Length: 299
Ligand SMILES: C[S@@+](CC[C@H](N)C(=O)[O-])C[C@H]1O[C@@H](n2cnc3c(N)ncnc32)[C@H](O)[C@@H]1O
Image (cartoon, rainbow, N blue to C red; front, side, top):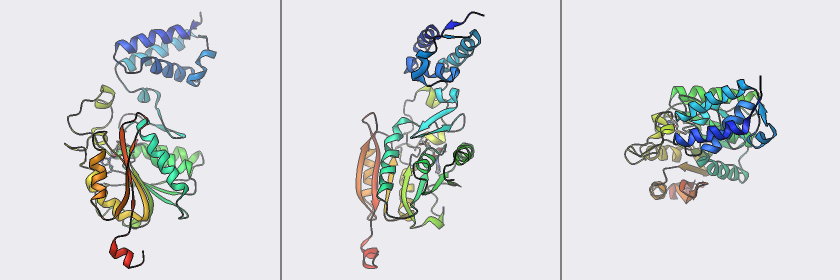
């Protein structure tokens, strides 16, 4: 049994993935190799030779990636902040685009005076934002809402894994974030709301990894990308404590519209638009402010 050079297998894989149109062939070839060998990507250089059965397994995974199956469905893992989430068919793969929203949310909690701070993640999918926040802030009470039962099952699985690892358990709700009767117990009591809802306008051109593998309920927000965001904003006003903060991720074509939806309601102030790691308009933040009537009542 002759051991074989891993470096050559990675070069072959890069070429195969490039020919298949995978956007980041070298990165994916290395990440799949790291997955098969069981090391961090940066440590691949320490493994010059591997057994033939490892090469065979690696080629199998590369062939699946060449079919444009998402890398994270093959490895079974996606990252958000400091945690890993289990992902696969039936749930949206968390994206790096959401990392700056997460960082903003964790920074907001640093200045939130309420103890314990109450956080709500709307459209939680795998539980990515809720669980990353619960990991960063063990003192927070974190709620998360998801409509789709398949996605909710992934969120439950990830929540159980994180709780077993010692994170504070989160509270999962099965429901529709546009439902005006959802979670009445949270009304006026939430310090921070985060949401990465479905927001792609119908008809947008998508890579096969997205179009064929992310659930369509996770992707599309009607013709304008705002069909979930618009009614969700009314609920956010209901749940947020006065002074509480919110962040909503959106399509890169919709920053002005989402900011406008918030600015047109008297209950929101400090509306600001933020870009993602790629410099594209990606999320809007705001605070729940007291209306004149609420201020007169001493809120
Ligand atoms: C873009 S994915 C984001 C998932 C997760 N927040 C993340 O960043 O990885 C949107 C999620 O919202 C869920 N969803 C869609 N419409 C919803 C609704 N009306 N109420 C609650 N969840 C909804 C989808 O099932 C999907 O899991």
